[in-house]
Image (tube, rainbow, N blue to C red; front, side, top):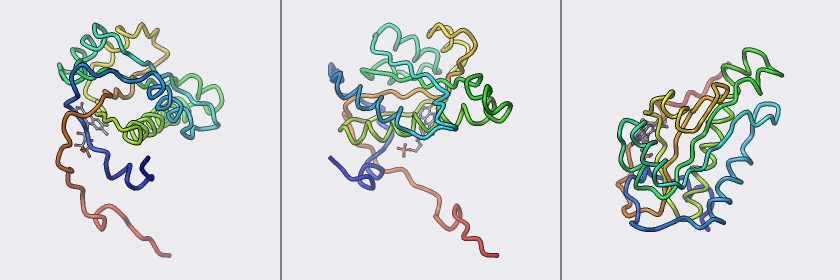
Amino acid sequence: MWDFFETVRHRHSIRKYRENSTIEAEKLHAVLEMACAAPSAGDLQAYRIFAVISETLRRRLSEAADNQQFIARAPATLVFCADPERSAQRYGERGRNLYAIQDATIAATYAQLAVVAAGMGSTWVGDFNDNEVAKLLGLDGALIPIAILSIGYPAEIPEPTPRRRMEDVVVYKED
Ligand SMILES: Cc1cc2nc3c(=O)[nH]c(=O)nc-3n(C[C@H](O)[C@H](O)[C@H](O)COP(=O)(O)O)c2cc1C
């Protein structure tokens, strides 16, 4: 098991997965448990997570995501959907437009790091057709797909991607 800092440093977008490898049910469960452990506004967890193992559905999701083939090749896909009305019931417009999206995004972030800690890799996919994904998952309009994570055992460890300089991103503000 890696500590938190190692886990974050070892997270790279993985787009090549070991062939014919499945994900153990306990590992997938552990990842989902960590997603649900994420903080959420008012502890409402205004999201739903769809876990997709089915090869057919993964292929269709990849088609709905600009034909990004690695989604079909990864043994599992998680689709994080915001539940705006759940948050709106308590927080009104702010819950509907902001908190529900943040809740779903934070849950996906926790899942992505848990995937690494569990010895696997993932890619966060944002380039997809909302309506097509909603249709494939049978969403009734109440849930909005926010992020897709393709998950599997890495077949490659990519070069680390560069980041902006800390000084360009962080502002130490004084009064
Ligand atoms: C909101 C968001 C949307 C993204 N959408 C895609 C995508 O559709 N396809 C893809 O291959 N990678 C996607 N990525 C992954 C980024 O390209 C990747 O995180 C970034 O280049 C940094 O590389 P790293 O994850 O290896 O550190 C997305 C990441 C985020 C956070």
